[in-house]
Amino acid sequence: MSEAKGKIVIALGGNALQSGKGPATAEAQLEVVRRTCEHVAQISGMGYEIAVVHGNGPQVGRIVMASEAAKDVTPSMPFDVCGAMSQGYIGYHIQQCLLYALNKENRHVPVVTVATQMIVDENDPAFQKPTKPIGPFYTEEEAKALEEEKGWTMKEDAGRGWRRVVASPKPLRIVEIEAVRQLWDNTIVITCGGGGIPVIEKMDGHLEGVAAVIDKDFAAELLAEQVEADTLLILTEVEKVAINFNKPDQQDLDHLTLIEATKYIEEGQFPAGSMLPKVEAGMKFVRMFPDKKAIITSLDKAVEALNGETGTVITFN
Image (cartoon, rainbow, N blue to C red; front, side):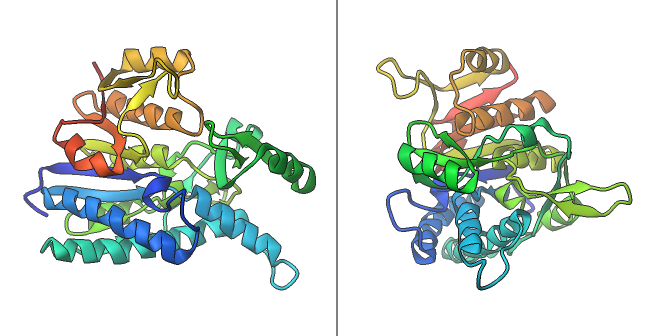
């Protein structure tokens, strides 16, 4: 990896880990991850140094549900522990599949998952206004019943159905960043899984887990800052960012400057918990590094986007 084209932090969206159409079994997810890792291996094969950050919204939601359902048999686990569980098993799937895909490319690079904690502010206003979708989709009727029965906060998610939402505080510091930096030169690191396990730092210096899900796009952006990446690559379900999404006058965007992105955000073009954090993460990265870029595109177009053939590129100007 010494003759790399540059450093890339790849943020994998939910569709890279689980198909919305198939069953949510471990076997079905593993098959999706296999296909995902073929694309990631291609990027590595192009000569880039990479790290992988993934989401965990559906997975952590199901782990919490399973834990609550079994509480009469075995104690339910706190939300932060469920997040750590999701980091472990998703990281394991990616490690296994990516190593195989790399070997097929005749690229013998170690792959490792780092259980990653992320410092958040216990006074972050996000704790008072949950926005991060987790778990499966529900009908409006099912969502209302769950609000009554369990006290969950439920919101409609970009026209796809209703989901439970939890607090999504901003990430402040990656606890294990030094380990990631030391591994970087000769290892592909899977880190900040699910945005990182959210923890607060107490006055005596010890860390304490909290019930939240950090947006993986903001976590990937912070990682990209701290390893001084050349590109932040955010992979999602669509090939390009669009305005007037799902309307007759939808317009796909090839390029976004900070000024243009700010204008569209003010117009409410990008849904919270969906495209908005991706665009905001890209903006934050290029604001920090004006000579670098962020790219938002679909998983299957990642290689073409890196070659400048598709995707939405966010730049300072």
